[in-house]
Length: 145
Image (cartoon, rainbow, N blue to C red; front, side, top):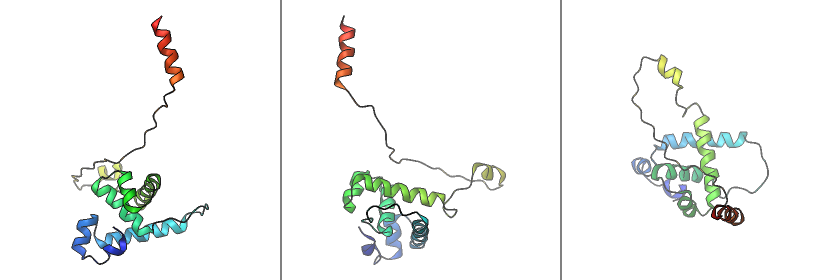
């Protein structure tokens, strides 16, 4: 679902669908647009999705815990492109002071008692060794003698 379609929703329906209030969504957009302006232009193609759609894609990924493949096919982009977009949005928002959590020392010094549970259930890329039939065949021959 694109941002153009969501703009017609009421505030409560928007929050139920995305997981954030519309005002929070707008502040996230401003932060991402500012970060995009500060980024160096490295050349390459123009992004297929606007920043609003990229943020919606990231929120959908986080909220529904769908795979990159499913999110990417929903938005008509490749799986690797979806990964890069979601990763950039997460990193950019985490670095901004508005969405950053206080550090451990700040929490220990304060008198306020926090009861927070954070669960990280994101996908992480794993590099596995390539199987080479020639090497594995030689190893099997050595063991049979």
